[in-house]
Structures are given as structure tokens and as C-alpha cells.
Image (tube, rainbow, N blue to C red):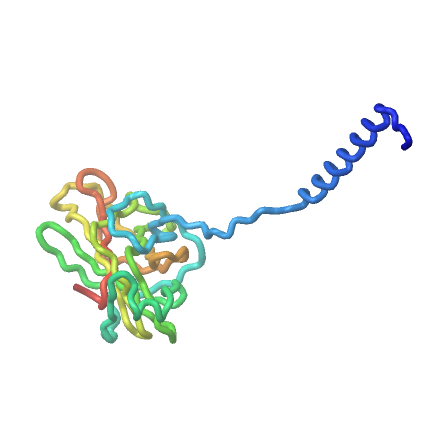
Length: 233
């Protein structure tokens, strides 16, 4: 048996350790970790969160892409009434959510009462497929330059249901605020209302002809309700 000095054995062991370390280092370089989870955020003009049943007021309004103008008022031809299912049943499962490009927005006639102004915000399916909306729209009053007027709308409490829209069908959500003449709030006259469908980022622009809206002071809050089938209560 050939005797190997202790110093030589230590050198060989050290060299082997360096080689293994180098191999591990090479295998660990050049890797990029990507997150597959989509980014979601709530918004007033972009985007709006869909499935929510609790009041919220932390939305932010942004104009994100070219918008298309739509006339104020409910569609002149009443579409077939849409259907609603709680918790996303079989009808909802057979379709997917409506995208902004597949919808037309309008604002229906004011139905005032008890010092409140109440407008239905209507989305109509203009595509050739069946799609769904669920929860709250996003909304923001803007002036002629596109600047937002007043704070972000709040959300009325209510249970969300999935509203299934066949081509030509509509869903509506309530937009309500105290009459400024009663509340004494400071007002402004918007040029348009930006409406974002639930879970979408792009908005639709509707010319506002509903007069002055509250923008600051006492009782200046504007509120939205969840979507329901049809064009008005």
C-alpha cells in the first residue's frame, strides 16, 4: 500500500470540494422567476372590481385608452331582459365576462325622490356572443379636459349576482346622490361620465346631460349599486 502524506490528502479533498461548489454555482445561475398571478386592482374609471358586496371608496380614476362616446339615455329599442344567477350558476359558467369593447354605455332618465337624484347606468351587449357582468361599475365625472370632478363614488351595500347578457341585452346599476339644492354641496357641471365595466380596465365615455352634481362639501358623496338585469328599476 502506497502511503500518501496527510498534506496531499487535504489538498485533494479541498480540490474536490471546490469542484462540487463550482458545479452547484453554475447550475444556479441564469434562472428567472416569473409570477403567473394576474395583477388586480380596483378602480372608478379603470378598473372596476366586479364581485363585491361591501361598500368601498378606495377606487382611483384614470383614463387608460381612447374612448368612444355614447349618447345619453337608455337604448331607444328595449332589449330582451337579461337573466341573473346568484353565485355564478350554470348559465354564468357557460359564458365569460363582458369586455369593454363588447359593450355600449348609456345613462337613463333621472328618477328623483326624497331629495335624491337617481340615474341608471346601463351597459348593453353589442357583441355577437353571450357574456356576463357581476358587481359594481366604475364611474367618474369629468370636465371637458378629462379632469375628474369630485371624489370617487362610494358603493352601496348589496349582494352581487352574475347577470348574463345575450347579444342586445342590458344590465343597469344605480348612480345616486343628494340633490345639491337640498344638501348645500358645492357643485360642478360635468361634460361626461366615464364608465368602466366590472373587472375591466378600459372605460366608456357617455355625455352627461343630468345637470349639476355635488363635488365637495356636506352630502357630496355619489354612490353606485351592483348591476341588475334590464335598463331601469
